[in-house]
Image (tube, rainbow over all chains, first blue to last red; front, side, top):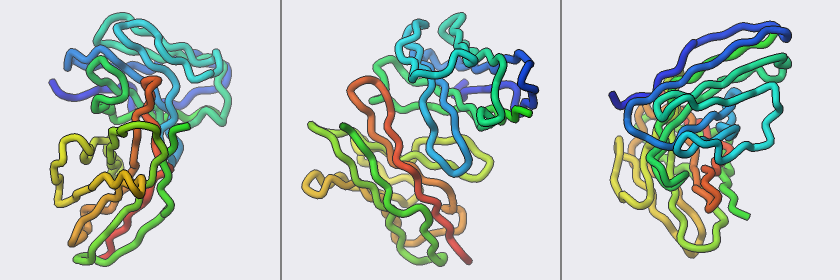
Length: 114
Length: 108
């Protein structure tokens, strides 16, 4: 399996809801990433996990909470989001060693916050 | 600080015309540079990278250290090349720095 999968594809939530995004890869990659992307803009890095440990947090608000239960899974827990958080959320993975390795992206979860 | 600049937000060409998407970077040392492509409704994917020196889908990019550029070129554009293109540079802190992107539109 050479793909990164993400569920759900679409998510609509209210500002008081709690939801989670899920990402999975079975390529043996040990680095996993969460990005936020607005239309026709580059992805903005949110979090990096390396060997299941959080290595980079780009000063993301605490209403976003990442979790890496094992080397294949990455979650992003959402709580009390704002309408401006509406975006495409991308997960990516790469071989350990950071950004010098090719990152493989998932198709994204399109999030709408009402 | 490391930085990637893509000066053109939108580039529109006719099918069969040559295309060049510009990318300039600032980096101290020997950079590793990537071009990522995002077709409509598809995932972001690597198109090519400096170190591999491959030609993918007819695209090439040459690193010019003197001009600090990594422009993406294709001699004859096809309609299926229409997409968002991002030039990217890994920084030493483990992050991938993306340019702002260039939307390529190839008209029939």
